[in-house]
Image 1 (cartoon, rainbow, N blue to C red):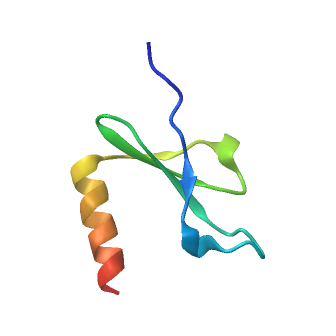
Image 2 (cartoon, rainbow, N blue to C red):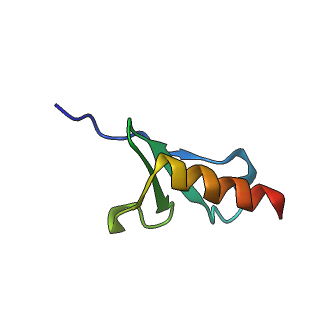
Length: 60
């Protein structure tokens, strides 16, 4: 039985306009979605690729 993933917003998203990407983790994947349109689905990345993506974003 698969539980629904729990999405979280970054603490950097603020509360003024709520433009944010939300993230959830499962055993094998990381899911990303638009916080303003959560019903539109999510981008699913394997954990290794998600780690590389986040590492690259932190370097900028």
